[in-house]
Length: 600
Image (cartoon, rainbow, N blue to C red; front, side, top):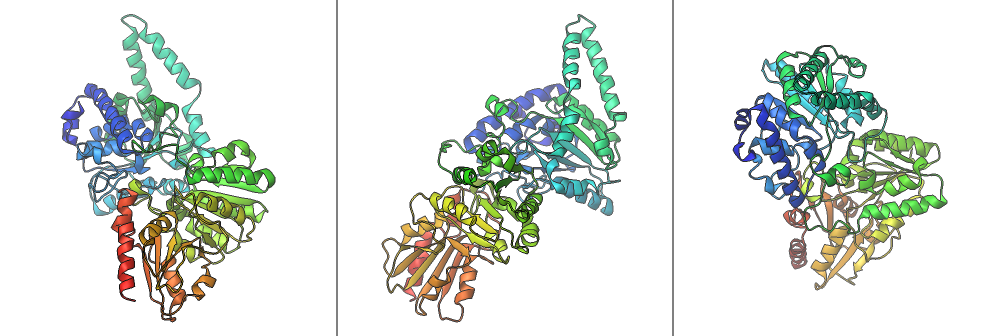
């Protein structure tokens, strides 16, 4: 059936009875191709029926905003990108998130949770202001109801004609937590679901009259939900509420969405329940592990930084009862699952609420605890104000464990960890450490407990295994007496790459930078005026490590060249391709080194 659906018009030409077959075909395509290319599998398997129903009912001019954007794969398949879907997350291929540059039917770029209702409200208000005529739908799922920004938007939607589809699968990346989730669960579970299934099975066993009776009762239920069911949870926001609907039942979805599209003129919530990972048993049984899968051929058992974080924190917590750990819905991904199991009373998962996580940590530190906040680099930027205002101004000893720093490859521009050195370096009182090896990472976590100030430990997913220990000073990897060029490399990938590039070159000294703030002033003060400096970092050049070095050495007659990411957002590709794009590959760095040496 999928072969016949090349456009949205092809989809609309199908009968409702043909849609289940189409959904089965799409699910098979997702399983086959995402397991091959890597990407977000479980969340997309859960929204197949919802996505098909939305495009079947609504028009191409209507705006659908996906929250979080990683559940938009089916949308991409249905909007003329199905034939190129094998290029998912590859360089110049289909993005793993909505991208307006890729297709105008991606109504808004979404990569972080909690933004869809705000964005959809803006689109709806723009429509009303300009006198245009289209529908606006925000698809909210995967933990976005734990995000504070969602409630800020709900507080503002009154009197706006828009639809909010609450895709309720009780999951973010880890399982959902908190009172908001509990309220959703109270709506979702209980005797109602069990009794409904029992009644259905009983009626369908009755000859002749059973099936018509069931259909009649389902019709009555639909009418009641559309017109009479109230829900105080959403009533408080003056929203019309319809639910709870089986989100993996395509015919029911088409029915409700059609009624809503044609009859509802106020902000409306349609709550559906979907099965994350539906149709693929391993993902159904373990949706967290299958939330995002590696491309085929990747060693899933390889050592990662998160493993070191887990082991180190657990060992430290054995002898210090003031250590607490905080995550924002990513316990397993950031390495805190083992800590959670061993020290449940000292572990806090705050849901997708990075701002709250940081200020909460500030309060813990103020009260005498030693909090470790583990968050991906691209998500930590959401809490910049809290880091500055609530932690740094009070000089509180909060340790930030910043995972996935630098290039992240296929996840692309919404997830690149290329800004943290810049936005953190400008904050007073905050120290920034950058391990290149697993042993350095472990040593830094322990050393942060000796600091009476905030510390940010910034690292990529994979580190090196062999290099000097962390001492607080930079490590010289290739010494060069009376050398012409000092190369200062931040992070494991660039430290390893520059060693390979410079190993057979004369007049070069290679240094592994382990502290970005403060700089190693003892080392910098020894650089002579006739020597040149090359800095390398997986970070934007503006405000980064290189500019800090250049500023400190200015006026001393020392030429400083900074290499990093230029003023742009980095699209999805492999990490090697991204490094090559900015001349940070071995060949690119070697070319720059030779050029600088020739000018000395």
